[in-house]
Length: 75
Image (tube, rainbow, N blue to C red; front, side):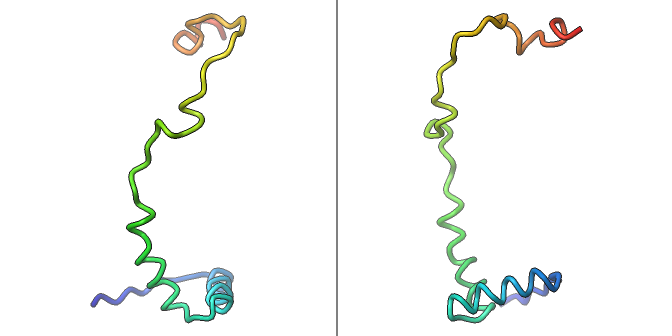
């Protein structure tokens, strides 16, 4: 087992203490549970499922090459 020591501001420690209290557990158990759930959180992100990725363009009067030649249009 590895021991980890971290420094927290008083405010951060109090917030962590409050969250543990509301969960009815200790800070140590709260952190252990959070770490145990990390593997579920770290699933690869599929950008094709992002609503922004799925957006289609819209009609505007901007030149088609605006993003490529922005300096030409600004200066």
